[in-house]
Image (cartoon, rainbow, N blue to C red):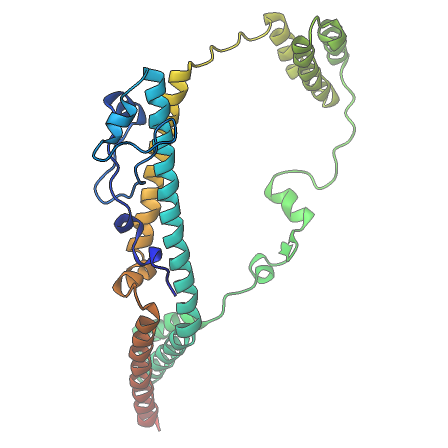
Amino acid sequence: MTTPEAEQTPSERLTEPVEPDEGAASAGGKGSTDGEPSAEKPSSADGTTPAEGSTLAESVGSGRPEERLERAVRAAEQALIEYEIAVETFRVEVENFSRLHHQKLGPVYARLDELDARIAEAKAARTGDPEDVRKAQEARARVMPMPGVEELFHGWMDSEGLFPEAAAMLTDQPVRSPERVRPSDEARRLYRELVRKAHPDLAQDDKERGRRDEFIVRVNAAYGRGDEVLLRELSEEWAAGPVPEERRPSRAEELYARLEWLAQRKDLLAVVARELEEGAIGSMLRLAPDDPDRLLDEIADQLLAEVEQREAELAGLLGEED
């Protein structure tokens, strides 16, 4: 069932990365923590592998600062890719084992739930104790099938989704389309004034034409709704002039930001990996990574023994009632 790579969890399969130089480490935000996977040693900028015994810090520490940052980013990207592969491989193994677990043991669990409900009901019928009655109701509720979508929403939706009337109520929107709006005299005045000032044909270059095109689209939308307040705000916005362009970050700043993002992404993957490993199915896989099918057989034998015990208990209760 499992591949050799999948026999280890993400935390167990990959080794810790070697830290890049101090500048790259501080830019990346975080180093590797204990137990977290990382990638193999990356190649250098020209595609060659660092010499035997050299560290990643040595490989990224030569050259100009920007070149070192670029190499650190490439190394971090490769480490993240390898980590994502490890996490996804383990996730698929957990999902496959979970599906097999449900297919093979689901009916046995269902039988146990049914027996528990019948035992609780038999005890409640014999004692009449309110607490026993409550427990019987709770046990039976665990066995009852889940209601369908239509039953849950009582005619609010079908298999295609919410009915239009229901959607309108949930979003506080009228069911019927709104009546056509007639703009006020002031709205018409503001609209004409804005179009005369901001018309795209008055642009001197393509960039300015694009800005005017986008602005006129907003003006037309506001006028179509008769929104006098918004038209006045748009008039003030146009009078203020275009917003100055923000300074573009330098290449070094972009690389630092990239390292920070990669570190954050790795932290998120570490959380996913830990949840997979500590979950019920992941924990079961770790008990028998080489032969999970045998583990399922052992669990099945234990559950069948519990079924026999429950059936004997129920037979005894029913026999006492007779």
